[in-house]
Amino acid sequence: MTKYIARRFVNYLILTALATVFAYMAAGSFFYPRGRYLDRQPPIPEASIDGILDAHNMNDKVPLLQRTGRWLSEMVTQPWPQKLGLDINNNWVVEQLIQRAGVSLRLLIVGAILGAVLGVILGMWSAIKQYKATDQIISYVSFVLISTPTFVGGVILMILATMFNNHVVHQKLIVFAGAYTPGIGDPHLPWTLEKFSDLAMHLLLPTIALTLFGAAGYSRYQRSTMLDVLGSDFIRTARAKGATRSSALIRHGLRVALVPMSTYFAYSFGTLVAGSAFLEIVFSWAGMGEYGIKAVQQSDVNALAGNVLFTAIVLLFSSTLSEILYAALDPRVRV
Image 1 (cartoon, rainbow, N blue to C red):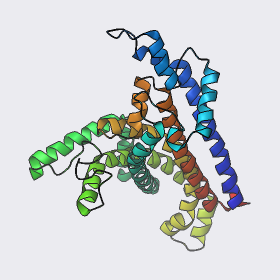
Image 2 (image 1 turned 90 degrees about the vertical axis):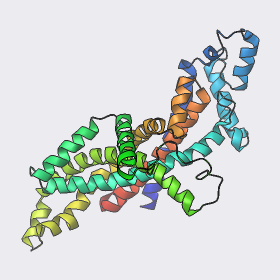
Image 3 (image 1 turned 30 degrees about the vertical axis):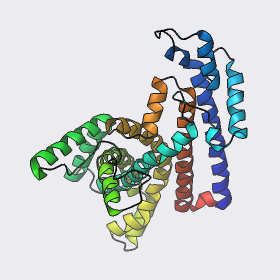
Image 4 (image 1 turned 180 degrees about the horizontal axis):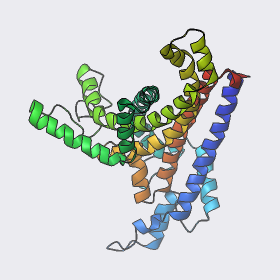
């Protein structure tokens, strides 16, 4: 099993490197950072624009392969903060990744785990209660959530939280602007109960949104796989040996139904990353999602490459975790 996981990890690591390089080359081909400095008053001399773009390795007058080679060379030879170059705002991309990754991962990890667990439970329950009222309610709610854009769900939660604050508790109990309250939850402040409470309260609404949207997709997939298991021969054999229906499904059926879910987890994590990016904009979180969207808006090649690298690393570890779960659930994979 160890060799299998190590081999899969190396494969995903190679894909991560290739995805980052291709993202840099694609951004370098289609972005136009020079336009940021044109049409200014007073006009900026072209030589000055070239100098600024050369410092950021974004000069469109330099061949793309040469820029890519310089970017790869700096990644290998430069000290740690300078490995991914400067973004368009003269900040080291690596430092921005470190500052923002913790913000995004706080949301992604909690939302992914809760969404997966809740979705699997609802999907299994929906399959067991097929065509009954419980199944119908779970199905309708899931389809509504799946068809609703993530940012719309975030806005609805903000409206509901505001109504709750104003008309129920008559105070600002639920806060949702930013990842923390300045002066209380700042990252450089020591951990206290007040800081923990502040971070948890700011995390509440975006986590609920990410969990609900994630659970909706998981529940549909889990219901489908569980229905395939219900009619399997090994379930009938377990029932024939005296096992109750619930015992046969939980002890034997659930494990088999979770095998394809482990693969689905890795691929759905990419959708989760995209959904969290929009939630970060809605809830004013200075995370990787906001950084990536601003990189596209500002034609920032280095920032976008760094954002893709972060996303690829997250998918690398989620895919590896998926392979571990797959191997744990299916003994045939370990051989």
